[in-house]
Length: 63
Image (cartoon, rainbow, N blue to C red; front, side):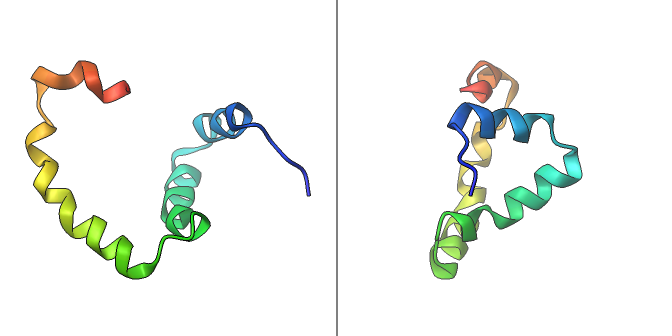
């Protein structure tokens, strides 16, 4: 098994096609061993953070 540095993995993801990025994102909870219940809790909490999606805090979106 080949090992990659975090920087290499990030580079691969950034350079991937959008459909490949979406596929990776869909598999990420499994890869991180996040339980299905925890995943559902996180998804149900997402709307609580919608107020942060505004032009005033766009500077923080890249952090």
